[in-house]
Image (cartoon, rainbow, N blue to C red):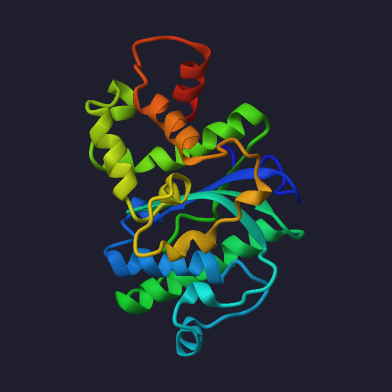
Length: 236
C-alpha cells in the first residue's frame, strides 16, 4: 500500500499505524504498554516534556497540563508489535509532529530499557485517508477489533468462533480505547484523557450503540456476501 498519497491536511481524518522493525515485538510487558499510553498523552503537545519531571510534580501523567494538543485522537489500539490510531490534526502538520515525537520518545525508552541500539519502528508511520463517512465510521470498529487476533489468529478469514468470548476479551483488553466507548472503568480509567471524541462525528451517542456496531462485526460470516462485508474484507 502506498504511504500518504493524500497529504495529512488539517481537518481531515486519518488511520495511522506502524509496527516494529522486522515485525519484532515492541511491547514486551505491562510497563512497555503503559509507557506508550503515557506518551500518547504527553507527546500530544507543542511542549517538550520529560516523563521523569512530570512524575515528580503530578500524581498521574494524565494530570499534566499539556496545552493545546497537536492532534485529536478518536480511537487507538496498541498490539504486541504494532499500533493503530484514528487522528485529525488540530494544528498544521500536527499528525507528523505528534507521530515524530511519539515514536522517537518510545524508541529511546525501549532501547535504554532493553540495552539495544538502532531503529525500533519499520520506517515512517503509514496513513490512510478516511475519504468517506462510511469508511471513517468503520475505522472505529477496525481499530478496536484488532486484539481479537490474539485469541483467534484466523478470525478474519474464517469468522469468530465464539462471539461472546471475543466481546469479553475486547472489554478486558487494557491497551485500546475500547473501554472508553463502553464505559467500562478500570481503576477510574485515567487513560480516557488520551481521547478527544468531540472532534469526530458522533456515530455512537452511547455505549450501547457502540457495542451493537462492534458485535455486528464480531458476528460477521465471511461466507456471506454483501456490500458491507466486501468493504470489510478489503480493509482488514
